[in-house]
Image (tube, rainbow, N blue to C red):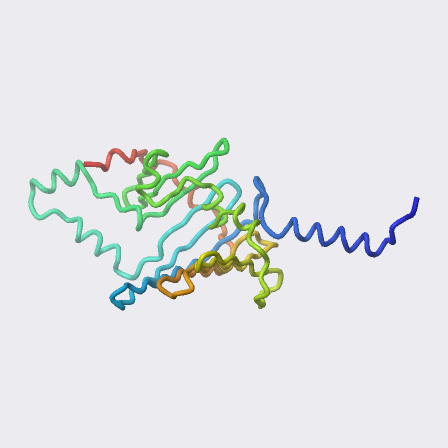
Amino acid sequence: MKRLPLLPLLITTLCLAASARAAPAAGTTGADLDLRISYYSKVVTPEGVSREARYEETMLRRAGHVWTARVLPAGAEKHHEHAAKPTNQAAGRVAAEHKHFNHVVLPRHVALENGQARVEFVDVRAKELIAIPPAEFGNVGFDGSWDHAYYLLDSTRLKAMPLSARVSTVAGARWREREDKGLFERVLWDDKRQIPLVIESGDKAATFFNRVDLTVQAGTSGALPWQRLKGYAQKEYSDFLD
């Protein structure tokens, strides 16, 4: 039997291995990360009006846990307190019985349990944990996917996205992109840390554009936020419904 030359065989093996590592496989776990995430979106209406939005979040990613929190401007907490303050005694009694729940300004904890995502929001001031049942995930901006919470994208869809000729300036990260019917998606994927560094989407007609930038921060020392919830009252999402 004729033997194959060793060098070409080795190169082929390495190329196949690199291709397999290009995107996360189901069930894999990426590196523990502390992240700062910047979101930007722009929409141009048919009337020619441009609307832009920007906001930031912090994210802690550990095996089985994802903690995200909106970065709020100085004085935001006082603003929310003032908006919720009752104007009379009767209103005060109603407010005490039925507080407003604004999930956007509360830290969100997603935990993986038995292969399913469990979601709760944390009101640090009131020392309350608000559990969200799966039927209500859509009402708090969560699609139910652990994959999306952990990687910030659909890892299966990423694997099907072709590698791009676009040059990456980050060692170990490569661009992937897809275009279909005038719509595009681009991802700068960091293979080592298993996280997207940039996510872009939009249309070629420039009527909308979205971009997400992730920056890796220094690791948190000490207890993680979901480990500091002892003594918090347990609340249900239904407690805040009218």
